[in-house]
Length: 331
Ligand code: DOR
Ligand code: ZN
Image (tube, rainbow, N blue to C red):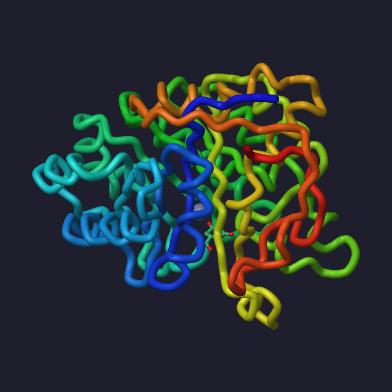
């Protein structure tokens, strides 16, 4: 048996409308809170939209004890007064390079210090963390590596801004993270479990296709080493990104792995397999509390060693490990 106190998912896609109703309860049941990504269509860029989206999430999760930590989609023309007001309703701002992933067309087309200075100085002053999808538009396996200099330039230029490298997938990112005090990172479950071989080494596995794409064994090892150690600079962020089965099992497969329903059982199994269960609390909640300076709702989740079978789908959305047996179950 293991009990986790107030598990937090610091990077989650809840979508909207019918998809929101399907997926939100699967996270709100197991977690005390989650950082909700703003890449809706159109993206969330106003306080009005933040509040309305939060209300729709609250409706979808009914009475669950769960706090959606809202975010804004980064725009380089947000000014200090707007951000000061927005800060009452959001926990961070998410920056996407334009066109890099699902619904990111309205992202930033050139990421350089001078163009972002006004907004980032205001965020820094207001202590609003910046979350970044850090990929260049180069060759797919090199995109994250090519983005590392951007992280470094931003970290140096805005030393008081907390910068969160979202869903890191490479050894280079782990090294960069350690070099700058104001860099932090989220790590997904799937990037701790798979490499590109699992996605495309045999028959193509569309449900494992995501951005950033899973990398090499040595990258996975670097992610595992830092996550399993409980290092205070990394926190769990699932990047659970549901798409309808028809959009995944199609030519032009949408990017995203839907992990929400299996996260905690699989994380316990993983940490247990390395005999590091004692560091899971830090990874799944405590580090995030410190990095984001937040006190989560109180919620204990207990897992027991007991076999169960993952459903093959949740209303037309296929989860990771669909149809497979897991060895830990939430009580
Ligand atoms: O695979 C991904 N899916 N990566 C992202 O960055 C976005 C996400 C989505 O929204 O589907
Ligand atoms: Zn994401």
